[in-house]
Length: 186
Length: 213
Image (cartoon, rainbow over all chains, first blue to last red; front, side):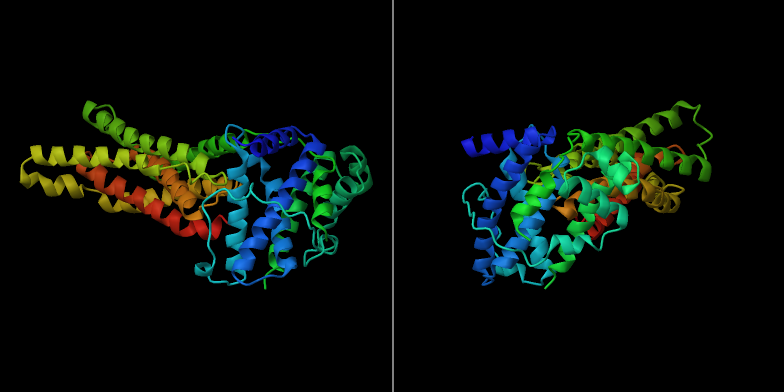
């Protein structure tokens, strides 16, 4: 097992336990790898816009975050990440009607191999998308995720219960992910 | 928006996650689906009245064992297929085993019986009822298992859908077995096996549409 795998996995496990800094480090490192992966894949079918690759990176990061309960700690992490990355790529190509035959979909774990830290802007703006969320979801995400308030403080500010805030964040992020998928439909 | 901002947003005030939620939700959902299936079978069709005889009881046990074997195996695979990349390390051909066993037993029982009995053994009295009931009773368990799988993150949607259909078909067959009075191994192989396979096929077709995330 590579050190990469070991490091990333320990970050993931800490993140699952609620350790925010580890989760942040994990998503940060993964976004570099995902960027290299998606840029490579899209370049091969002649789509070189950095924005599209960045859309995919953010879709995958959101999916990794929202689906982190599906990671089985008994298994290595990189194949799990790779499966999500690949699934989101295929889904994106299907949405944008690229012929699947044009894209070499790999079987190997190339996710861990390369890194690309040149950040780019995605083609959508999450903050603008967020304005379209229902009020309670938007308020919960803004309070807890952007302004860093505790769940209790957010509940007071949004005028809903604490479990309402938690649910609002979860549903809101899911809705955002769906909006991004629609938004990037070329 | 920069990816870095998104990462910050997602990591702020992170909540811990329950790692065992997939398997647990699946089992709870399956229990719920089974209760609905059982209720539908008992209220809609009623328990067979001859259960006190040894013959009827033995065949009930055979039918339940067949369906239970399917559900148990399918559930193990479904828990794996619900996770990203689960299809890679899951050679799911083992799930064919209960079908294979019942087909072999059916063949043996046909070989031992005079050919004049074959038609009765294969077609039974209620083949049409069986053909219709098992898929109908399977609808609710199917919907519930698809819902649970969708909340996870399957990456092979056709296969995950197929296994959700298989689980639902198996649960439904267990419920229907309480009513069914056709007691022959060829009947179980063809009509139980066939309808469960039908549910699996329906799941495979619906999976890519219903399971997207």
